[in-house]
Amino acid sequence: MLIFDFDGVLIDSLDEVILTVYNTATGQQVTCLTDLAQPLVELFRRNRFHVQPIGDGILLMNWCLRKYPDESERILQPQEYRAIIDTAAELVARRSLQVYETRQRFVERDATGWTALHRPFQPLWNELVRRQNQRRFAILTNKNRTATERLCRHFGLNISSKDIYSGDNGVSKIENMQHIQQRFGANTYYFLDDSLKNLQELDRAFSRRKKVLVPLLAAWGYTGPEDQKLARNSGYDVLRQADAIALLATMMPL
Image (cartoon, rainbow, N blue to C red; front, side, top):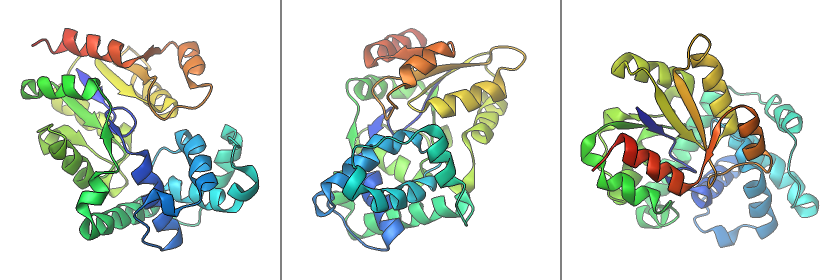
């Protein structure tokens, strides 16, 4: 069975994430990326790959707000990022909920402007849309379900709600993968994600005794500068979009 991450694999949502996390961190209601300082935007972009649950993006944005005037080109080391996350006073599920609520207010104010901040990754997206009636794939994401469904519908992917495994209520990708296993009972799951940390955590959780999960790193997503090398060192394939389309064609032929 083939499973896709959403942000960074199927949809380029980075502009929206920057605005939504900025608004969550500051309490503002900015809807245009050009209203933010460009060095701040670039600093967050460079370090976006560290973020797993989006609630941690608030802490990264707070760090960027402090550092961007002097360190706009800095890339945090994993231990530095971990130290930032460890300072959190609130649970990550609560922080993620704050981001989802801020996102929903954005949609309610300007749904067209919000949607315009997103772009499908092509040509992979169109190839998936061509096969959508086969119903032999799922989306496994840390994004909230409402936003994921809205974007899928807008860009022509009529996926069933039950095939979207989302980050609502603080549910982790490991928990959702357990639900996928219980529902589908497949022998092997191919999971395409742009987060090496997500892949490593899922691999440890599901491949202790036999290779149930095949982790695949998307080369076009929000990856860190060393992620492709580290993924290969972990035994994971690094896929270009052409590779992902070839896998899709093999597992879901037209």
